[in-house]
Length: 120
Image 1 (spheres, rainbow, N blue to C red):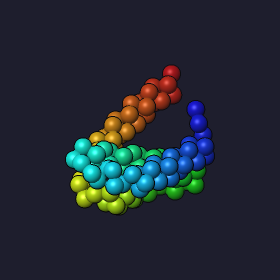
Image 2: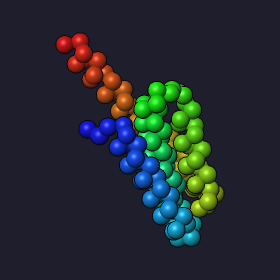
Image 3: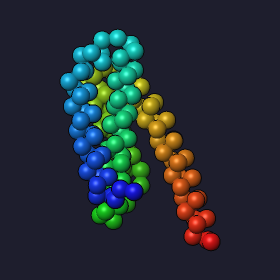
């Protein structure tokens, strides 16, 4: 399993790569309805990797902000989506909410498994 330092580095690199590609192809992403929805999904991936970066940074530095990390990652992703098309902002928000729900569910499952292991 990757440590928080390497995971932080990989998520930052993925963020830079995804953002660069999104900006390079923003004309194509804004050209049709389907590509606009794809642009929102790509922006939600920015949310995911930035949230991973912030979470690993918080773990390595001992800082806890609660919902601040989620709000910051969502704001950055929405701004990036806004550079492509206005509709991308809405689809990014919806995809990000879905991703956040799934991450929360997965986190709860992992936490309950680790508590069961500690009891035995």
